[in-house]
Length: 108
Image 1 (cartoon, rainbow, N blue to C red):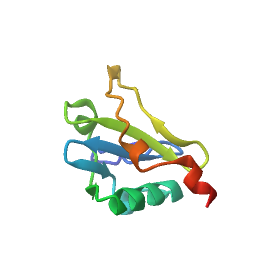
Image 2: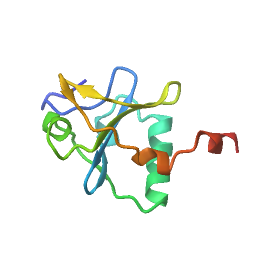
Image 3: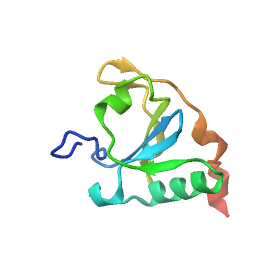
Image 4: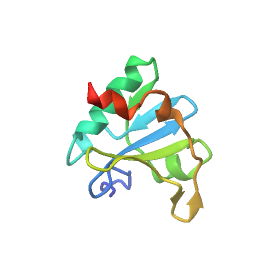
């Protein structure tokens, strides 16, 4: 889904997270219909590991350009889903979340 400016905001039931060479980006909470629980959890873990996380508008060019190193959809029911193709373009398969996300940590 996109806002009136054409920026990507979220999926119909998911939040967005994009990996870039500088770190991570996600649309700001004020632009979301729902600030997801898993989104918040992942952002907290990334920041705790020293990763750079920027909340800003995400454009289609951010995803389809060569700066995108990974694109994820987040939802507390379905988990973290790596997007492999966007608008007919194959996307990189980044494993950056694997370094901060261990499903067994949820059993604490």
